[in-house]
Length: 465
Ligand SMILES: *Cc1c(COP(=O)(O)O)cnc(C)c1O
Image (cartoon, rainbow, N blue to C red; front, top):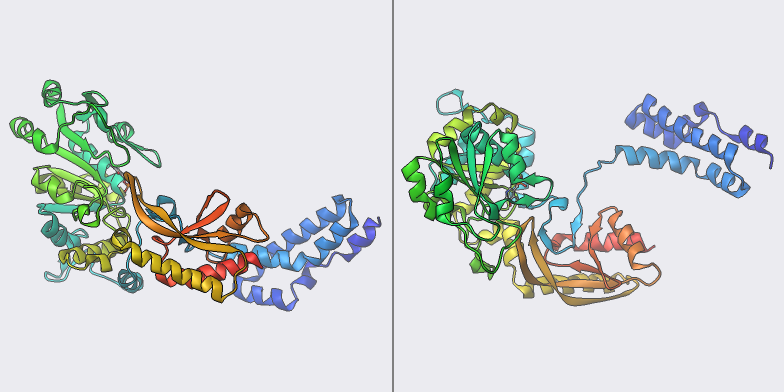
């Protein structure tokens, strides 16, 4: 092999930079960045000429030089966070961004993004206002709480509450409620981080009222109840509800804090799901401070909502952590609009996408599946496909053993293996995230949106040809 001949063929950087396509990149992204990309790819080519044993591989490296420069630049400038199609059937998929917001809220968000707002400005008085004021009234109206504030997520809400009420003292928690949520949120660790000492009571399966009574000392600062949202203890069990703890709380003056997890504002029974404790129930039971996520069953943006007695919320607002855990105008906008939807319960499923997916009749899910199958036929997508009954899930660490009847389009490719197909769909222009089961590819229609059907077809066409 005449390596020197190959070396002589390596184009000069300056010459590459004069090519038409590269010139257009320079116009869009600047000379110095494009030059760096070109240099890196020319360096790769040089390395190939130096080390590669097969001439055909070297030829290939020459012929793909421009496409590799293009790929590098396009890979760099394309946003890494992208829309995907959730075909997993898990409605609150933490890895896929949890709750969807409605297009209406999306439009309001877009408007807020590029305008000033009265985020911390009181339009009545013409003076400095408070960022929580916008959501307070609607939250309080819906939940019956006295006061409310919002932080970055529910994990920060728990941290802030414990740090404010129990730092340097003890917080009492049942051993049956020492929850770990995905992503390293563990009650004992959050307690430790807040500076409160955790005082465990009871056992894994049974905690009695007297267990709480026995551990109360002068140093006890709060009773913490945690909703065991992602697991169930069955059989020989007993726990003490917040309502039952209330007399002890009143007698000792020690507040009850409850981490509800999901933030359900409606009885889920109406959708044929098991009862999940609602926010209103916690307030009614006399819980002093309640916190929950914004982007679980509430169906809003990522946030940690803290509601309850004004005296405690006031203390929290003064905690320096509040500033560190502060939410921005986008969160406030989306959350306020979401709560305003809840003011009117009738037809709420049409306005909160999470509730729509939870409550949608199976016949509607099936019709969407039939529409997708029809598109597969119309576009002559090769392979075998059919509509099959499937099971969807709430996800996001909520209702762990509950499955909803659903439908899935089950697809078997002709020329690729199922795992090759899965990878190509995952890396497509609009990535599809589905499931492989028994050598077929499953796309659950409960989490696929009506307007995504055409995008699915496009991603399939791209993946198969
Ligand atoms: C999900 C959950 C959390 C964490 O909420 P994030 O909003 O994800 O931070 C905390 N506690 C409970 C009980 C939960 O279910």
